[in-house]
Image 1 (cartoon, rainbow, N blue to C red):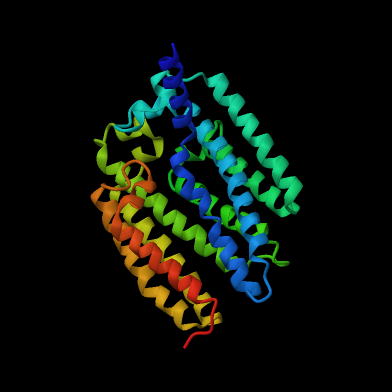
Image 2 (cartoon, helix red, strand yellow):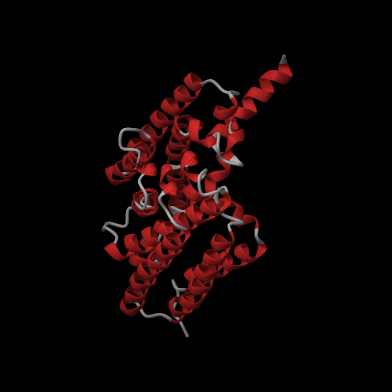
Amino acid sequence: MQEKAKHNYIHYINAMRLNRWPRSFSIIVGSLAALYTVGIAGQNFIAIGINFVLAFCVTFLICIVNYIINEIVDAPTDYFHPVKHSRPVVSGNVSIKILLLIALLFSGIAFTLSLLFFKHFVSISLFALLMMGFLYNIRPIRLKDIHYLDAVSESANNPIRFLIGWYALDPGQHPTLLYLICWWAIGAFLMFGKRLSEKKIFKEDEAKYYRKSLGIYTESALAKSMVVSSAVFFAAFLIMLINKLNTYNVLLLPISIVYIIWILYEAWKGKYLIDEPEVILKQPAFIFLMLLILAFIILSFFPAP
């Protein structure tokens, strides 16, 4: 009996997809941008650290709610996926009622903490993140089933997370539109890459049963969408470079180009993005590239030689 209870407990943990924490941690981009804008002189880094950790926690709670909703409503189509068919709801190993109660509890905790410790912009951003999850997953709208809008709407979570990280530090001003465009475009690039990987693992007549949009997409169209998304990213990034020219910022450009080319290559092979983008985190080359980007971002806070 105890072994069975433990087994069920693991299924509920899996349904919450805790391994996706890096997506919520991406709010750090917004926090770093806020610090870069106002400067680091005279900042209370202990308070900043506490605010960031709390912002990460409430963001992750809302993301878990969206994952639970996705787990439930996608069960009929996940059955046709070569990896996702083993998810807890598809396998019948969890109670949907209990999952919904967990989602309700986590939503309550997230918004309570947000309202208590942050200004209202954080709560508004959290609500936007939750609503995007509903629009993306739940009928009658279900943006996930509409080609192009599926990737565009899902990647909108990137600028929303950016805003949470930004407003958690309360810099006293709003971020520029270029920041949001840049972060949205890189998210769209990754989402189109994921769709391309998914397209490659299904036979032409099977893809539509897993996701309606895959039945409409072509591999060529998805590859072109990745190129367009990356072009939007680089356009916004270059404008920001011109406005705040810095040696370290300039060095980020070739690194970003390498990153874009690599992801495009992996997506075309249909290998690392077949299930979730988090699998890329296991690649040593990707870890090195991300650490290099982070190092240059941190260096950009200081006077360049």
